[in-house]
Image (cartoon, rainbow, N blue to C red; front, side, top):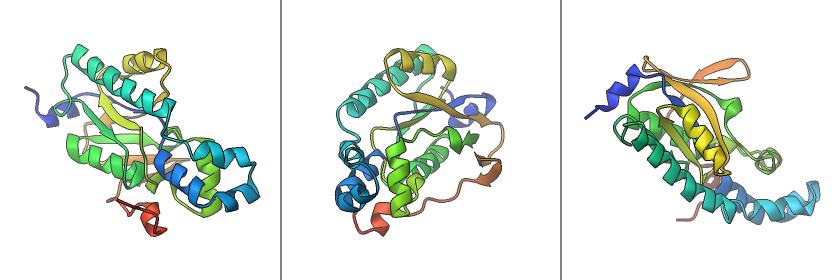
Length: 200
């Protein structure tokens, strides 16, 4: 059996399925509907309030099946030399931190490649909310062998998926954003918690 540290020997890809901050966006769209509708067409809050449902939920379940099958087909096993985590409370950066702790691998990741819906961008800008710390749902971060092949399988099934980074042979977790470089920090509170909207 491979130890988690063995992943450092590989240049494995970090891929994402779905979009970040879906649940948080849906909650904000409902809680601040009037304010959002004053700025944007009413369809925006209506559509955003349903994020995480319907096709988002169906694609999430399909993505799990495809990623697990792909991992097995490549002779790997989740939790040993491949990793899969759902973005949830605390948002994308919290999910990424949890991934880093699980795999004990260094990685480099481009924030500009992280999938986010335009409705989320507009709502977060209006409400001064950081989408990277906003509750996610129906979104996976995965480290897998042959990431290009995994992406092809996901896209063939009609699932939104992107390559966002790769593992390295170092311990550092580096984030690139529009020419700037930073290190992944400890998770911050979820933005919904700051707004008093996080309900267990």
